[in-house]
Image (cartoon, rainbow, N blue to C red; front, side, top):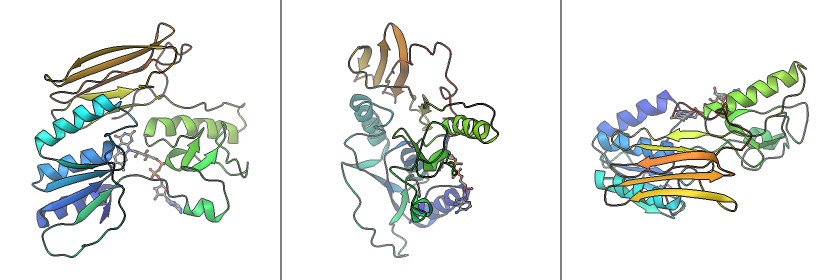
Length: 259
Ligand SMILES: Cc1cc2nc3c(=O)[nH]c(=O)nc-3n(C[C@H](O)[C@H](O)[C@H](O)COP(=O)(O)OP(=O)(O)OC[C@H]3O[C@@H](n4cnc5c(N)ncnc54)[C@H](O)[C@@H]3O)c2cc1C
C-alpha cells in the first residue's frame, strides 16, 4: 500500500508499475484521479474506489462528475462508486497487483492527544488560533477553518499570513476563508473549477451542455456578479462555476492555484 504524499511515494508508484499489473486507487478526488491516470499510462490495470456517487464532488456538480467518469472510463480506468474501503487484504508480493494509493486526510493524532478540538482537522478561529488553546496556531492542510480543511497551497499562504501578522502583533487580520480553483492534470481532459459551483437560492445558472461532444460549462451568478467559475471537459466535460462574493471584484488571493 502506498500513501500518496511526496516524491518518494511517486517513485514508489513508478516502481510498483514496473512490478505489478493491477492497482487500486482509493479516492476519486483530484490527486486520486491523477495518480490513477499516471499508473494506467504506465501499463497498469487501474480501478478507482470512491466513497461518493460522483467524482471530484468537492469541485464538480454531479453532471460534470459523471461526464468526467465517462471520459476516464473510455480511456481505460474502471470505477467503484459509492464504495467505502473496509479492509486492505492481499498485499502479497505475487507480481499480480494489489498496490493501493490513498488520498489525503489530515492526521490529527498529535493534536487529539493534546486534547485540541478536531473536526475534519484542527479547529481554528479567524486568527488561526486553535479554539481549544489560543496559544497554539494551526495553518494548512491540518487546520479546519469554518468547517473546511483545504487541500491546496493557496489557502495555506493566506492562513500563514494572518497567523504571522497575529503572532507579530501587526494588527489583527482575519482569515475568512478562500475561494479556490482547481485544474485536473490529465492530458486530453480540459477540466477547470473555481468557486461555489452548486448555486442555490438567489443564484442564476448559465449552463452549456453537449453530452455527445463531451462538453459541459456552467457559470453561477449572484446579484449579477460571478460567484465562481467552472469548466470541466474531457474530450468532453466542461463545467462552469460560481460567482465570487459581490464585494470581491478583483481576484481573491486564493482564486488562482497551481492546479
Ligand atoms: C501529490 C500531491 C500533489 C499536490 N499538488 C498540488 C498542486 O498542484 N497545487 C496545490 O495547491 N496543492 C497541491 N497539493 C496539496 C499541497 O501539497 C498541500 O495542500 C500543502 O503541501 C499543505 O501544506 P502544509 O504545510 O499544511 O502540509 P505539508 O506540506 O504536508 O507540510 C507538513 C510538514 O510537517 C512535517 N511534520 C509532520 N508531522 C510532524 C511532526 N510531528 N513534527 C514535525 N514536523 C512534522 C511534515 O514532514 C511536512 O514537512 C498536492 C499534494 C500532494 C500530496
